[in-house]
Image (cartoon, rainbow, N blue to C red; front, side, top):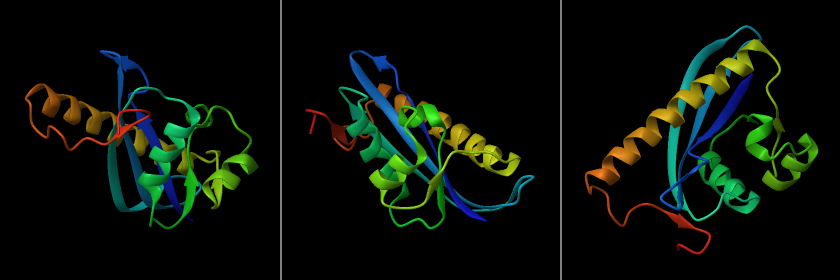
Length: 139
């Protein structure tokens, strides 16, 4: 099965802002694990809040143009029912159940965590100023 596993790192305030990175991993999985990783995308976002709109927009930016069933942890989407998430995203979605799905989410988690560490480092060094996407009043 082809999936797009999504994870967001940075949903806690740093200096009054939320410096988040969404990672999307496109992979072919089996029930037991990942068979092939096809693509990975990191999308940074600096926001003033982590409300539902901001999180959904970040996920939408992260998965845009990527093929496969979208996977995410239930907590990342405020524990919404699956059918609601599908309605919001406008595409097939599920929460991870199999070991393969969980491993794909784990890979996305590692990517989002490492991507956020990179963004924080670049910001500390003054690199990339003005290129970070802002949301919720920061646009």
